[in-house]
Length: 201
Image (cartoon, rainbow, N blue to C red):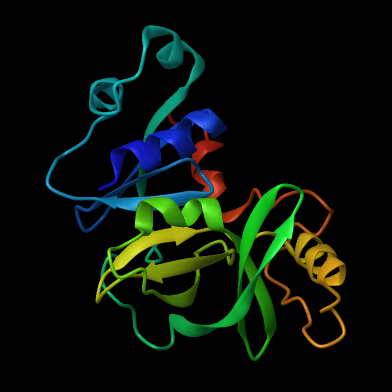
C-alpha cells in the first residue's frame, strides 16, 4: 500500500473513506478511487496515525468507515460476465492541467485521471484494465498490476470524455462511451463517490 500516494489523493479531495466488504476485505480512497488495504485492520480512528495527519488536517478532512456489499469491491478477478477487459490507446489526453489515460471497448472510450494510478503502480509499470459495474449501475475501472486488483477508479463522465476527445481531434473516430448517468457536464461524482455521501459517520 503506497501510503504517501493515497494520502495525497485523499487530502487533496478532503476525504478519507474506508470500505469494509462483506468478505472481510478493506479498501481506502477518496470517493473517486479506492485501493486495497493489506496487512492491517484499519479503523476511522486509525487514519490520522497511519497517514501522519496533522491536527489541522484531521479537523479539515472527512474521515469515514462504511460497510459495502457491492461485489465490484473485489480484490480477486471477477467472472467474465461481471467485468470486461479494456484496451489502451497508445496516447494520453491532456486537458485542463490533468493527464488522462484513454481506455476503450466496443462501446467507446473511457477516460480515467492518471493521478489516480499512482497508488496502484508497480515496478514493471505494466497493467491491465477491466470495466466493472457497481450495484447502482455506475461504472468503475479495475486496475490489475498482477493477478489481483490494485485499484478501482471512477472514470469521468460522458460529456467530459467527449470534450477531451474533441480537443484532441479524436471525436470523429472514437465515440465517448456512455459511462455515467450524470451527463450534466459536471465531473463524475457518482458510483463509488456515493459511499461518502450517505449519513454513515
